[in-house]
Length: 564
Image (cartoon, rainbow, N blue to C red; front, side, top):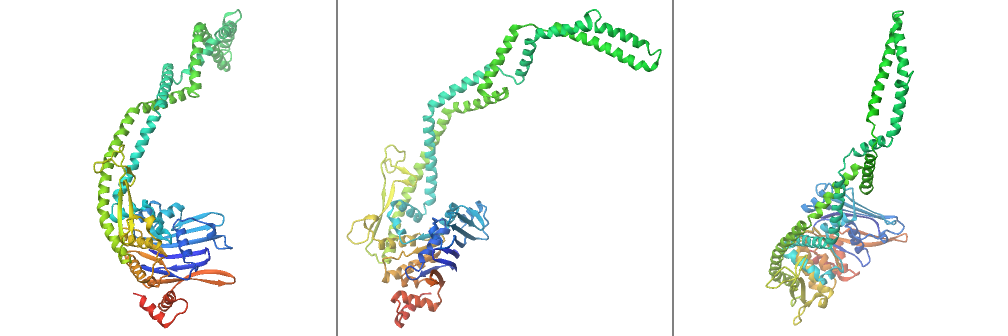
């Protein structure tokens, strides 16, 4: 239920804070006092359209805040999924709009989007404005009303979910077929690329090894000449380094006998001689191994050219080329599964068709059974509301479709997301008139009563805890107004009901009564609201009955209208 509503700088409301109780609450007041402004504020906090024109003149922002007590488990689950603490079922919604166009939405001090507010609002409050009953003229909502009444909304939701899964699979088939040509071309390209890479037989260290070998082959002659020159200088010519170093070694070896301190130097001289000998042997071995092979050099250059070509096409190095090969191999495997994928999707489609056929036929049969009871109950409610000769019919239109897979009563019929065919309420308000669509025959007052009759019948099925009726009593009066008040009171036994009304017969049925009024202070208009005491309530109902002039008779009559 709505426990509290706080409004700040909204339209002509300066600062308003009002608490509400359960049951039926009446809101009355002079025309233009601001009753509809309160509904606009409530709409805003429930995720409705924001408009900077709502902001009070001279102010930069407007804020609306509401406190709800929530017991519905599904609504509490939604809050939990959003990470919002429900505070033992008490939820505070707050929305601030500014003249800069910015919106700020909060739920229990957690920032949320307007979409979240709207989602919660749809589950918390059902508002019927002065013109909302016109929605009855749209046949698309008739199926919603019938499913709510017949408690088949769960089955319908199951069918809708399966129907959209079916459409998704149909799209998958269409996409697969439309891309068949592209798929084949892509497969050919991927196979060529994989074969090209595989044919090369790449290895990770190959390029470095080839470059090293290429350098050796490319500079073999120069290396050979340099090695021969070094060998000649240190070993092979007369007076070579090794020969002279031999003399040095022998002289140093003779000195330690003369002076032991030179023993270390003698050892170093010997070591140097041995090092040069080893160097000479290594250089001679290397010189023998140097290969002068132009054909091998050409072969290496061709191989490096092949590797560089693959790198340019598929990656900056061999590792990236091999990674690309693995990637396109996986893609090729996926593309190669086209027939398997197509077969799987087609099997899924057939399964969907079987399930949808069963669900839609069962739902259609249940709706037809529900329609008879629904018709009688609504006609009874309308009779109570003064429409004794009214007739209502739930018309089922099953459009034939030879291409469809659902067979109903030996005929293939069209299927949509809500089931088979369409549903429309036909209406005859007067004796002797043919049944016709609501849009062609029903007046505003008749639609108002029909809406009330529907809500009376759907009261227990509808899980929304708060209902607001904004002058839906338009076009009625007298005894019918008395009945309307009783109907509203009956609805209020199951949920919290607010009714903005100009009819004393309805206001008298309320448990609590608020008056909305305007005042002018310092050339500024202020709209406010306050709960009436028992005596004030009698006076307000007397005013509603007899105008501004209140007499003992109107007061007495007003007291009689107020029912506990």
